[in-house]
Image (cartoon, rainbow, N blue to C red; front, side, top):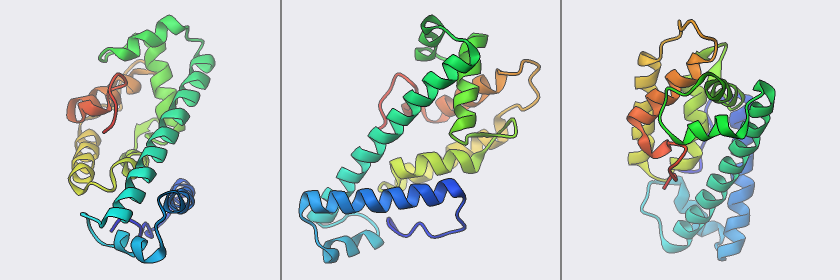
Length: 186
């Protein structure tokens, strides 16, 4: 089911759902879809042409918004930890990152809900990633597996305060290399 995101909602899930509905309405108008076209979105893919166009438009807009939000948040985190642009260049590589870059990552993950109370949040990861992959059942199941694996593997007892940023990104990149900072989500 693509449209029914009606489970126990956290505040972020409620905002995401409302944003998705508003964006879907805009995409629907853009492609000339009517309510009967959108009813197909309550089922599973493949969708008829107009409904598929709405999904494609929606995913493009959501993906772009998420990326833009991540970049803005990363800039804020960079300033917060006193990182220079040269520190951020390390993020194009693989973890472990040097301390300043790891601190930027941990700050970013905290702000987007993947870190809560200095621990990896499986539900935070899924809340963030689900809108990007929800139209593809196989990708969604893959991301659930990534979330489960990282929930088991991330070490929460590292001595350095920002090491959690390295632990989480290493785990996510291990199971979902397509999410690497230097890659595009398809």
